[in-house]
Structure formats: C-alpha cells, structure tokens
Image (cartoon, rainbow, N blue to C red; front, side, top):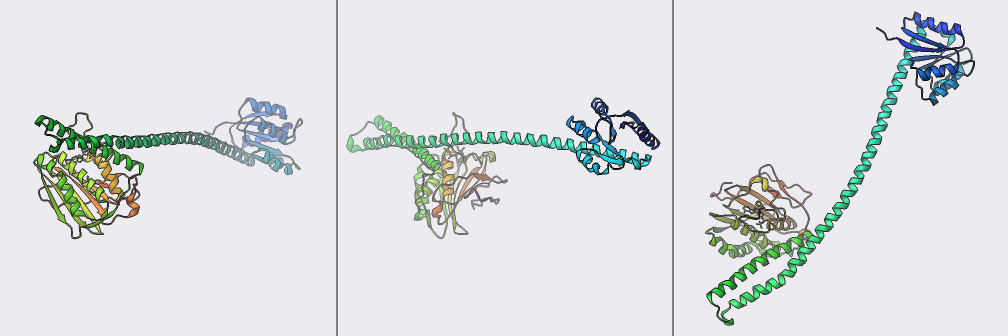
Length: 444
Ligand code: ADP
C-alpha cells in the first residue's frame, strides 16, 4: 500500500489550491492536505510539523516565494518545495532553484499526471539530497576524527622520539661507563697478575706449597677477571663504534693453530679431543689476525665449556667466491632453535639464572657477531639439543677497508633452524642449506 503523503499547499487563491488538491487526488496519490493562504502561516506550519512536500504559489499577499524560501533556509527547515509560477514568473524560476526550491511548475501546465510526476520527483530528489548531506556530514565527522587521531599519533610519535633520544643517551652513557670502568680496572688487574707471576718465580724466594697454591689462584682468577674486563671493554667499544679492524696479510691456519694450542689444555682438562682439519689450498687471508683469533678463542671456549664429553673439531675451508669458512663443531649440550636469535644478543644466555651451571658474561657471541659483520662475513649456526652445535663463520678472503668499522645489524634465523648473521643489515643473506661439515661422527 502506498504511503500517505503530507502535503502543504500555500496559495492565496482558493481555486488554485483546489485545483492542486483535485489533480493530485485524481492521480490516485494518497494524500493528507494542509492548505494555507499566506507566507507567514506557511512558515509556522512548516516549523511545527513535517511535510513530505510543499506546493508554493510564487506570488503571495504578504511576501513572494523567494523570501519565504530564504526564511525557511535560515531556519534550517528542509522540505521538498515545488514553486507554482503564473505567467511571467518563469524568469524568477532560476533564482528560486538556486535559493533551494526543488522544482517549479507553471500553473498553466497543471494536470494530475504532471503534478503527480513533479511530486514524486521532488520527494525523490529531496531524499537523495538528504542522504548526500548525511553522507557528507558523516564524512566530515570521520575526517575530523582522523585529523584528531593524526594529531594524537603525532604527539605520541614525538614522545617516542624523545624517549628514544633519552634511551640512546642512556645507552651511550652506559657504554662509556663500561669502557671507562673496564679500562680503569685493567690497570690494577695487570699489577695483580704481574706481581703474582713475579712471586711465583723462585729467584724471589721459595714459597711454601700452600703459599704457591694461593698465589696461583690469585694469578688464575686475575687472568679470568682480565679476560672478562677485556670482553666488556671490546663490547662497549663495538657499541660506541670505536673498535677498528687492523687488517693485514696473514696465514690463517697458523692463527687457528695458535688459538687451538692456547685452548688445548682446557679441552684436555675435560678429556675432550680437539681436532683441526685444514681443507684450504691458500692459507693467506687479508684480515685482522688479532680479531680472527679472538673469534676463534671465543667459539672454542664456548665449545669446551658447553661440552661434557666427546670432541671438538675446527675446520678451515676454502669457499667459492674467494671466501673462507672457519667451523667449530662440538658434541655438547646443544642449543634449542627458539634460543638461536637470542644468544647473539649482548648479555643473553640460554640459562639466565644466577645458579646457572656455566659461567660467562653473555658477551662472547655478541662480540663475534659484531666483528663478523665488520669483516663483511656471516655466521651460520646449526644445533640440536643433546647432540651438539656447529658455528660456521664465512668470511671474505680479503676484507674490505670499508667493513672495518661497525655496522649495526641483527642475526637472522631461517625456517630450518639455521641461524645466519647477515653481513649487511640491508641485504638479506638467508641460506637454507644445512652446513655440511664432512664429520661423520656427528649427525645434526
Ligand atoms: P657466555 O658463553 O659468556 O655465556 P656467549 O655470548 O658466548 O656468552 O654465549 C651465549 C650463550 O649461547 C651461552 O650462554 C650458551 O647458552 C649459548 N652457547 C654458546 N655457545 C654454545 C655451545 N657451543 N653449545 C651450547 N650453547 C652455547
């Protein structure tokens, strides 16, 4: 059933009002009519009730149609409005439409068909306009919301930036403090080591067995402390970007032999065999021998520390593309895949508890990671809990001078449990193949 429309007819001519009423009734439109004869009454009627459409005679006794439309607009009364014009009013029609009339119709053309058509069109146009206005309003509101959100985000960004600055400054101060402290502590530590070594020399007088034992303990603990201090100092220098490589041409297997020689007694003390395999045609590399040895010593001391029985292998191998690989493999406790990315972070250990079985600062791998990055190389890690670990360092045979300063970058973990330290943080270096060591004893 068609809805009943509420129509207001504004005309001072009663016959004209009747004509509109009849025409619309004949058109079969269900309508509830209200009729008024002047502009002022029409204004109050529209103010106090809702109408679906107004038929407005342009010439009214108290005011013309344009004035009434302006008034309605000022009062924000929105209603479909069809102006009925007499002969000669047509020129004004454009003005009326501009002012807000929905349509206009010459009284000479009044017929039920045309009137019904105009009525339907006016209502349709008005509803479309209302919907557009609503959508526009909603759009404006969401735009305002977005602007507000943007302002909030900008505020938060500025706060985060400020906090970042503060954190960076705190971190810089921390590194500076660590560097200064470890540097200052090294001097008395060297004195302790030096004097205990002197005390152990027979020419300074014979010590009793108990005294010699105590001085040896002082010496060993002093050496251990010095090593820890050196680790902290290296780390803080790396953090500050103050550690520079000193590359030179040297014999890599020789440096490996020296490092292995230094660690042999530690391995033997735990009954671990320490084997070296050289698969290299060209022994010469251009790199910093002190830092390469440091990497090796760190890897070997970890391998020895985390292995209770079995063997440790070191392999040096030529790689295609003028690169070399140094691999340290052990039959130790292994590392769970979930810990792969963390162990390369500074101060991170798989066991972070105070009562942990294995001592250490948690800086060794962080230092190795930074050094390898500086050398333009990468680290690959493969490990299995209870079976053992393989740390493989791949380095260019000749490091580039531009790599001799520290860049920041993170170690990356691929989907197969192989961890890969990228040589350049901007360049993806994933390798998905497993490290093949050629050692049949250990299947990882
Ligand atoms: P630290 O040895 O001083 O604890 P590192 O940075 O050298 O610190 O190593 C971080 C952690 O990685 C170790 O605490 C250990 O949990 C794990 N890790 C390193 N090397 C090995 C290894 N060969 N076998 C098992 N776990 C290892």
